Length: 378
Image (tube, rainbow, N blue to C red; front, top):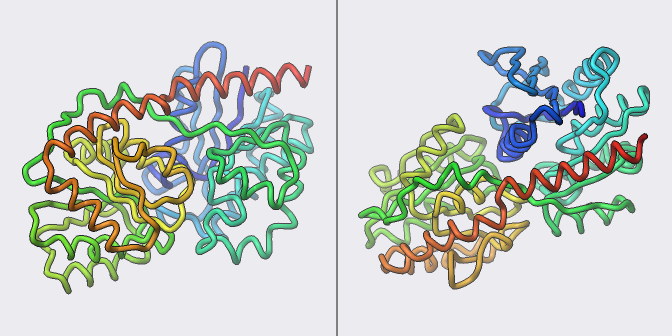
């Protein structure tokens, strides 16, 4: 089976959604499933890569930031990926088009599918659903919502990553939507040591943006200056200057390190040297950073938004906090920082919990979807 994948995010650019695309394609690629991925280019990255059963092609879309794509960049990607997809379909003859993100990839897939009669599948990752990330996309959807109806209505199958995303989508799109959660390669993280550091290491991973609420991290940690800890913040974005200012205001320069936007392999290394994931987001889909933290055995302190509650068994591997409640985050962290045995046990339990999201289960689920679409199109 030949599958054309369209996604404006693919490592090392983009967020967790791009990592999901990579893990899924790499996990499924075999003599029975061959992928041609059309994604966005970025500076030094090669325009074309080919390995066994996997082709990665990067097209120019005027992307200026590794961690995000603005509306103009997305519209450019729709236009260029559409035309490139037409060429690939006519020359390579894929059986299915798989668009990750209903916008922008879904638009390219819908247009190319309409013209060539190729069935297309959409995986919506959260922020591409109206209401999934209102701080970021509310203004966009005021303009593009009428155009997205066609994308959802004509898809052969639609997948979303959580019950929350499904519920939000059904408000605007009266179509059948299945749920397949994001997956993680749990075996990749088995060598991570679960013994807590002294002092414990806290990590934040994500965009420094309003919906991720990065500015809250130094505010939370300012309440814990009487305890021993170190913190690493991984990411970049519009709130970086605010975060830096707050770190200086609370004299936390020697305790919080800002690493900026780093390569996925480096993220894995930094995670292996951490104990607690702090995620104070206002909005989430199913955050890849959360799954990585689970698989690598981190205690979780997360907002009760999106699919975050799916990752935490209360009293076993972490704490769910009402988004924006700084005192609650600090209280949860204090419990973990003050109890070495509790932190150690939570780390062990997180690794066990990660089995629920093992990439092999997700691979099997998507293979069934691909096979059903192909069978239905015969």
